[in-house]
Image (cartoon, rainbow, N blue to C red):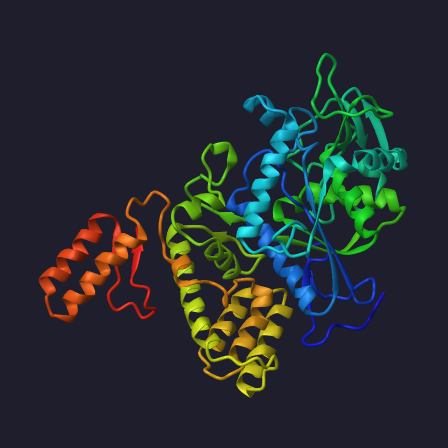
Amino acid sequence: MSDDPAPGAPLRLFNSLTRQLEEFRPIHPGEARVYTCGPTVYNYPHIGNMRAYVFADVLGRTLSWKGYKLTHVINITDVGHLTDDADAGEDKLEKAAAENAQSIWDIARHYTEAYWSDVKALNIRGPMKAGMPEAAHWSIATDYVPAMIEFAKSIEAHCYELPGGLYFDTSTVADYGRLARAATEDGEGRIDAVEGKRHAADFAIWRKTPPGETRQMEWDSPWGRGAPGWHLECSVMSGQLLGFPFDIHTGGIDHREIHHPNEIAQNQAFCHSEASGANIWMHNNFLVERSGKMSKSAGEFLRLQLLIDRGYHPLAYRLMCLQAHYRSELEFSWEGLQAAHVRLRRLAKAAANVHQLAKSDVQVHDPRLVEILAKFDEAIGDDLNTAVAITLIEKATAFKTDDASTAIATMDQILGLKLLDLERDNLRIRPKSAQISEAEIQSVLSRRLTARAAKDFATSDRLRDELAAQGVEVMDGDPLGWDWKLG
């Protein structure tokens, strides 16, 4: 294990396993190996799901920025995830395929592509495909089913069979549930009872296909034809692609209670060790939306495309996430998104003004900017404090020195807001449902400017009212110079 920290401020991360900040020290010198629990591709991801990947992306960018060779694995769950945390019942992919009268493989492919589209829109690095930077490896669960069977065979001494499949006996590993801080064996309370289980927290490693049923995704195994339990895939893919132990495992805070403790139990059994498999476990908090539309079970729910259709730039949502610490709850509201959109617009406008003054010199010489970069490094090193980091990049946009854009670009390597690339037209709020074209708006605005220059305020007001009747709000005196938006 390397004891040499990366240059700059130490990188201290909150470890959910120990409930304390710990300085990151890589297991392999100069490398950082990270695993992130990815989506279950039975439906479109909602924006709460995507907060987890914005957080994981900032972590990965930070490790790259610190000079580590990053290996970042994110799994795609296309099999084995049930409709809740029970150990019996319908698989989410099988259920979606039946409801849509489609092949389960087509369902998985469609929603995987939708997820990758959101990943690209939010400027999350990866996956490795055309038009995307190479920064993450997406592993598909069904590609690893043979390896899952071999893994399960290797830990069979910790398991027992029931009519429904192979179950893991959580009493056979040390300190089960310490990640969740479960006070009793009933602490994993969202797991439904299954007849014959030895302990309430025991979980399925392999689920047999019920007699008389056929699944679209099922495989032969020593325990009968069926499918893997959904906890198994992450242990297998993280171990195969990163090796045990690896540096960091991330996921949503909901995984801290059941999924990740079960992963840890499997890792302990496989490695014949009390170690958890990852040195640091990190969890982002929930995105809260008070109307109840966040849940996919509610029918129509908040997905990134809905925000885009309402005219918001997807990076406004990324900024909204970064304005809160990843371990804090973040409440979503349209007013909050609007404020983030305006803040992004101001940042992009200021960055564009600075960028026009920039030279090709890649070094930052201005001592005031050097100090800002040092404070930025300290903020990011303090458990990824992006809320403070944003205020520092705002300070940098106020400078009119030749190297200010270099400082902005350096900080934006972590924030991922594309501040030096965003264009004015892309940051106007224009809902997809709007009927009036931008050319028509600009034509009316041009006539209105002529009227105002001639002090013909009656015509100016009439033209403004015409635009308002079509949903166009004219923002006279807008300091950004972006003088209209569609409501």
